[in-house]
Length: 584
Ligand code: ARG
Image 1 (cartoon, protein in one colour):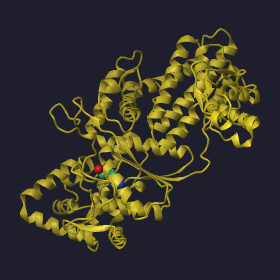
Image 2 (image 1 turned 120 degrees about the horizontal axis):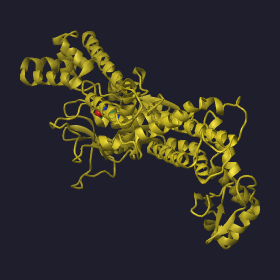
Image 3 (image 1 turned 180 degrees about the vertical axis):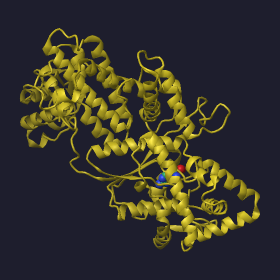
């Protein structure tokens, strides 16, 4: 592990052990970036009481026992008892080269790999995905990729809404128009249109309504093969729609990851029975409910989780309770991350509370809702088209690609066909990066101009940064991977300028960021890291000539730094799922 905070931390702990005894060797070394040096350790301050010594004396003791030869210059003590570290340029340079050459770029493999369910996307069948689902899809996919890279066993889970009373209507409609009717194909191309026409018939045709209601009963009884076959057909058409969207987005979900609400149907009666047997379920206004303690409405009245409705049907919450039991008992997951809109926060808090009451979740469980903030229109409300309709996902993605094409027009010296090809990556990358770079629980305003800007923390800026590094190598007639490979002559990176040092130091932090993102399930931290890296590269590139460097050694050193930076950016953006055009 090259991360200086980790390296310094372990050295400070060793010094604490040597100075004050083994009991002190696992003290938090409190390493922080410093404005005077590179880093400082604030460990001395909280130890003052325990050791009965002045923090400055403790700091001096730490310094006296520190072994950081070759890593940093001799440390100094400042302020009330900070220990300051200035890293040695040669150490930074050697570590940066090592990161560039390491297949994992310095990122450790999780010491205790966990089985983690990442539930994301989860749209409703026969309805168009909306921008909310788009964001849970994109953020969830990045979380899954990072956890997997960090060494965990990730189970992607697309918890689609494929069950419930409206499916009687949809299946009956599919039955009556026939699977091959153009209207049936809408399930594949424009699910909302299919849903709407079924709805219109349902509302205007009493006979159809009755048949639809009979169909629900057949569906839920599970013993009518014809109904089952139609449901399967509907699912197949919907899967094709989803795969088109996921394919265009470059999202890693496959058919095998779909485990929709219907999957848990058989487990629902057991949920109700067990909650009843445990005395947790009570009758309330004809429904069966659980009141988890601590949840009250505005009027102060206890809020219920409805597990069986007045009409005998099960509820969304019942399915979620069954899902929790399945994940704990059958999948044995150590952690489950629900990447779902923040408007469902209360739902998940209450459902998890009921599961804990029932003893279905292990103690210190890691079942977490990763709330996703709303994607808003310019007015802060729902995203709408100019004519005021809700924006269709397909149209949105197409528009992104077209808008990207317009931005590329500004780039000189590139032919139109090349620009067309790049526009797709740039449009999709811009949308994905905008979803990812805002803290996931914050809402943000969807703004083409902002997300497509070639400057700032945007997808196109980062894509451009990688394309620019590639172009340096193209001009030099060199392959960036080859010059880093172990077969290449072992030339060193030599730091001669501040901008080189800042960039090289930044590269050492990749592994820590991955660990942080895996722990918090917050991809925006990785966005912040790649953006900072690209910005430091920009400064370096402005200040330090690469191909026209003064001498061959400097040129090689800078090319190595470029190649290592490219690998870090490519890996980071790859884990975010942002496509990277070769040139731009
Ligand atoms: N299908 C739901 C929706 O579109 C999201 C499902 C979220 N996941 C869950 N386990 N409830 O709102």
